[in-house]
Each structure stands twice: as structure tokens, then as C-alpha cells.
Length: 503
Image 1 (tube, rainbow, N blue to C red):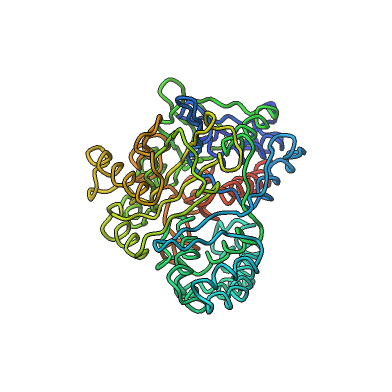
Image 2: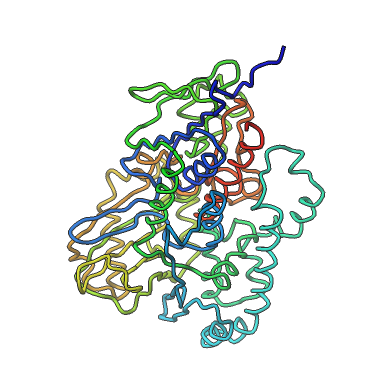
């Protein structure tokens, strides 16, 4: 007699419960629903988006969370897999110049797709670095193409995948044991150039002095493939994903926090919230893997991930955010502007060694009014200001020290020429502690675990639980890693494998 399919309901539809409505979870939900799965998404916040949220106050509108949008093809693939066109849901536009880098001595470099424009700007402070730029771009493109072919487009669920001969050869060719700063030093000499391209390590929550050279590929991603704005603001990506998910029958329940995943016989049999128990066939967690193991699962159910192993992972950096609604414009600011400190390396010593916010942080500012986005009253600016910060530890207490650090950042902004920020009509802060409480980010880390070692870069926690056969993961802590387009890709990859196994 044939056995019943263990994941099939009487009506033939498999039920998938997705924990978390971040971009990775929504991406996976869309793909699964388009293949005929019945999908429910639970989100503990009042709106979908995970770390990407829209904040409106006093006539000013902000996107809190990721704001630098690259690799548009990753977003387009979500719609294409569901038989839709992205342009019918979401409007984007290229930013040119893509971003502005301002250094402590006043030197300015505007990121451009034109190699000639980049060389001209770099030559003003380092003729040597200008001459090396095109060679570096070739290396960045090579790393990107290898990564796309061998790492970003496939899951690595077991040792059979990881020991594939082609993958092994590609792995060695991406300089896995060379830190990013040492690769950069082969091409460049000047501290400005080293900081400008070393900053790409922070895109995955890491230090340029520890993260592998692979992340030099982001120079190709930003400089050649481009950075884009989103009409209406970055949160429109969430809105577009949520709209498509609803059209496909996905049920999204916000304001619903998951309290426990119930495991019996090595399978997740239920997901409990405060007032409801769900019994899906499959569970997909778009929540930090380490937080799921540490908070939602009993330790006896996860023998491969005991508490001592969780503690061995180094979390990524976090961020201290200020949202400033200021009744003036700042001509010096592009849509994306970065102000570097005089001694860049000290920032990462503070964050990863001392586990304290840097006293002179690099400041990233998103100023969408520079792209004519109607996000502020006439003549005003809605500024998203981000300073890199450490993950949560006993070395810094955000409940007691937020106010003093807020003043430190505001004073630095004024010294940089942004007068009037201390008189903002709207001034909101967002700390690593708040991030942890709102999204379940492990220790308040933005990107899950850091990529400060080859192991944490290339051997991340699996997208499929080793202990619980119907529990899957999507998001920055798992393969292929952190960053908005990569997390979106993670959702597609995991959903496609689930479709292969369970449909």
C-alpha cells in the first residue's frame, strides 16, 4: 500500500508558514505561492519589511533600513518567476553620480560608472591610485563573475555541494584567505582610496581588515552595474512584494510574534504565537538563524547547534540611526553621501575589539530629496544618518548612553558643515537594541553573522536545519549572505529547492 506524502494535505496543497516578512521571506513566499503552495507569513511588526520600514512624522518621510539598491536583476527575478513584470509594480531610476565620498581633509570623490571620471578625481590626490583603478576594476569584475557563477546562484546545503570540484577551484581563485585591505593594497596606496573601497566590507557587516578579498566585487556592482533609486522610496520594494504576494494568495498576518517552534520526532509540527497554534507542513524562518535556534527552539531539538556553538559565531556590526527632518536643503549631499574619519581603522578596532561605538564614526547619509523625491516639506530634507555600531554586549548600554551618542553624532554632522541638524523638526533615533526587539536580529546585528573569517563567509549556517527535516532558513545569516539583493536571492533559492523536494 502506498504511503501518504508526509507534506501533502488532502486537497493536495502543501502549507508553508513563513516566520518574518522581510525581503527574503516575502521573496520566498512569492515563489512558493506561484508554484501552488499555500503560504502564510507571520510578522511581529505592524508592517511587513523586516529591517526596512517606513517612518512618517511631522510631514517628513523616511526609509529606515537598507537604502542602497544594487543588482536590480535580483529583484526583477522575483517578479519574473511569478510571471510578472517588475515595472508594473515598482519604478526605479539610476543615480548618477551613484554616491559621494568625502574625506577628512575635504577631498571629494563622486562614484561614477565612467572610469575616466574616477581616474580624474583620484589623480587629484594620488596619480598612482588613478593609474591602478582600471586594473582594480578588472579584478572586481572577475570576483563578481566567479561569485555569480559558483556561489550566489546555488545553495550549499551539504558537504557534497561544498566539495564540488568546480566550486573548489573557484573558491581558491577568489583569494579566500586574503583580507580585503591587503588586496586593495596591491593596487592602491592612498588612505582615501583604501577607505573608499574598504568600506564595502561593511555592506556585509564586517571589517575591511578582516573580511575576505571577495567583497572587492562590490566595486564592480556599484561602479559598473550601478546604484538605483526607487520612486516613492525604498519601502516601495516591500509594498510591491506584499502586493504581488497577496495577488498570489499569500496570507500576511502582521502584529503576530512567534513564540515557539514545536518539534516532535525530528520534525517541526507546530508554530505557536500568543493566541494561535499553526500546524504547517513546512516552516521557513526569515529570522536570524541564531535567534531561531536560541529563542524559538528547545536545545534538545537542535543537537547540532548547542548554546556553546551559537556563542562561537561572531555577529556582524550593527548601526546607530538618526532620522532628521530638517527645514533646509544641503547642496553638498547627494542621494548617498559618506563622510570618512581621518583614521578609518580605529572604527573597526572600537566596534569589533572594544565593542563600543567609535568616537569619530564614518557617517553615511541618505538624502532622497537630492533625487527630487517628495519626502519632505518644501525646502526641507529627510535625512537618514547611519553610524556603524557594535552588536549588543555588556560593553555598551544603549538604554543609558543613547542620548550622549546622539549628541556626539550631531556635533560631528555640524563640524562637517551640516548646520541646523541640531534644530531638526523631527529627530528620531534607532539603536541596535531596538533593532533586536523589533526584528529578532541576533544581538542587534544587522547582517546576522560577520564575514570576518573565511569560515563565516563561506561556511554559513545552512538554509536547511540539520536536526529538523522540514525547517528552512532564509536571510543574511545563511547562504549566500547579507545585503538586500543577496537576501532577496536567498529567498528564491530556498523556495526553488523546497519546490523541487516537496511539490
